[in-house]
Length: 447
Image (cartoon, rainbow, N blue to C red; front, side):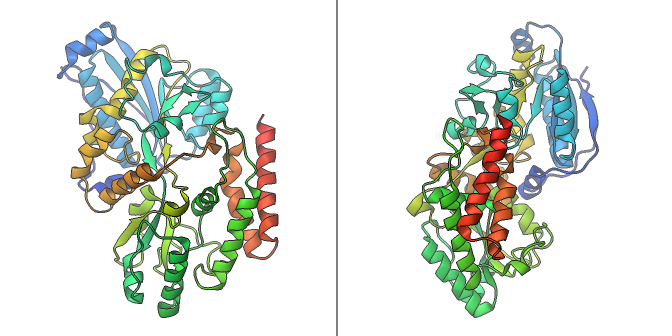
């Protein structure tokens, strides 16, 4: 007799609605246990685990849509592996990692858990707090269909500690109506920065709308990389990027003077999802993580069509940057690492699970899964998958700043110094040097 989780599933009829769940929610922590028996592949599943009853715990953060899809996928896993019971622990993003860090410190972490690799991964790996998946690769865990760059995001010193659940990265996102109103041709993947500046100035002159909202660190880091300067080596050593960062700040200041960017007074404090110049349709474009595009589109003040292309300068200078996020990680304290690896394999590779999970954790990394779900998507969600494929095609190397313990301050520091030089409190070069100094001190303190 099957014991299936009974719960009301919200409609996930459109791919765009599913993709919105890539962002976390503030839902309270909830725990649910689901068990199942029978289903195709049951005999194989019993043989794989020796037929012994196994209990696993898994945890993640996210929105209701992510919770519901993941729980449904876990029901399917237990149909296919009837002697494995999976207990799910899930909540919104707030407080998730605080709880997880406490569990890891006490050796009571789940067998499998979702981890923020931008903030916590390097420090946990450096302190031997993560489970090593390497012994199970090619056995319980198949990674042949993963882009090599994606796997790197969950490695430390050559050890595979996790498997990223989604792909993302910064792309150029633009409002077609803003270009149409100004009679300016749409951006193309081979745009140079000169093409960008000329188009933005023409839009500003003809419509009074700015070319781009004040950029986030996504564009800043991309332009630093386009100059040939990377933030960290492949070994995870911080590099001196101060001069390149200063040059980017200097360019930003010039663009604020000619209508490409708005004045800072129109920007600072207007960074929420509900209130920024791109969402209010007063700026023609932005550079943002492609996975957030449906969310931005839904929040825009007018009904407009969006376009997506490579960040200007990419074809000329490189710098395209694909990142892989939210790795499924093996608990170092797990008593059932083989079955845990099987669960991770199921969540990333199983074709039936893929049609349930779709894009609730971003665009799936395995190529075969992306090909499977693409015909099932439409609108913005399909554009996001196409955008990730564009990043994969154009990413020549990735940065390794997340491998540097203490580097979590990079993003906020870059923005703080960007505003400081924008307001004339520092020269661009002084701001670049100050950013590097702050980040270096954080890294040194983490050693």
